Length: 215
Image 1 (spheres, rainbow, N blue to C red):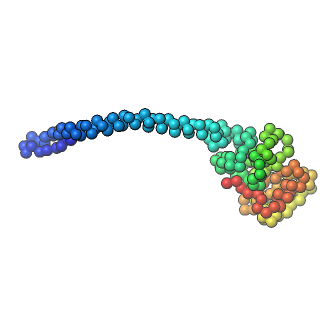
Image 2: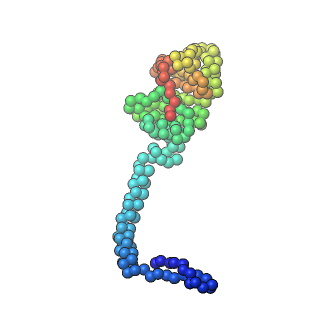
Image 3: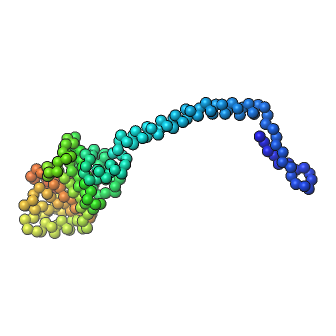
């Protein structure tokens, strides 16, 4: 339908008239409506299929979705893959260091708060429910002037302190040799390395470039 505005040449104002649609236009409109009605079921089916697919992905792969999963994982109750650990740390905005991936291992993350976080290594993905001190753990503590603090801690009784090849301050207590502390230079991050194997934490602290931030 076409609406036009025409002047009638009089002072009474303009006249509006409606031009009837041609028969061919009517027929064309009817054909278009029939085609549209024919394809509506297919469009609806495609939309529903997409929504269902998203729902399946969302709920069969909870490692990438959901507050409940993140809360459980941040309490150390989920054995995480390397990708899941990284996604959780980055997604929660945490500062977390570790010693890099271990072949076949899974990991747990315990976030006491944003300033105190622990990564535990589970060799072969086994040991999630083991509460004993049987696994390698890397703790990250927000510590202002971490390098100087670690140096000063190393001056206490039974303590050994030195600077490693990365330029970080390292100290441990000879009566508790399974834990070694590293004050990262130019940061407010102190790292605790725990290993149940005697001497391994100290070896890790001395290994260049081994301590890295998850990002």
